[in-house]
Image 1 (cartoon, rainbow, N blue to C red):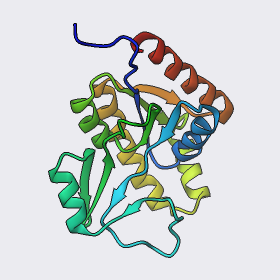
Image 2 (image 1 turned 90 degrees about the vertical axis):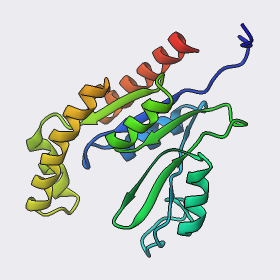
Image 3 (image 1 turned 60 degrees about the vertical axis):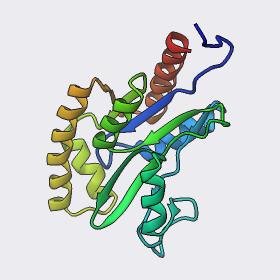
Image 4 (image 1 turned 60 degrees about the horizontal axis):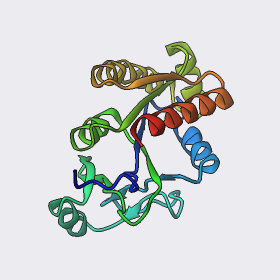
Length: 190
């Protein structure tokens, strides 16, 4: 009753999937093609590496991360190899929808807080193609096979959480399909 129908709640789009599925390329294309969509920039307590691009993360010390976490400042967060990583809560002054490129475990945390989020699992057409993509970008065959095993686990978890699976066998078609899914979700929930 107290809601203002003229105020639109931003949509959160979660983009998950195995390494080699093309999530980063798709995320950039989606944001470039939609001025109502912003890519979230994760925070981390790890040290900046030489090969990190300037806007890869918001780099903070451990105490700063913990303070923000304790204040509820992350939609999702985890600790990996002694360093924290987290997706900041959306800026209420930014009316754009938010695109998160995170793993399925992070997607689970987002869904717990924002059950109306659109969760998409981007995948390669098959495991053989995924191995080829991973080896083509520099992974060893053993690393690629380990990533494929993890991808199988994540597929199952994503399905259990109600993610929509999108096969990336053609980049332009995949971006168009996801753009359509975002538009449909906006229409149904906006």
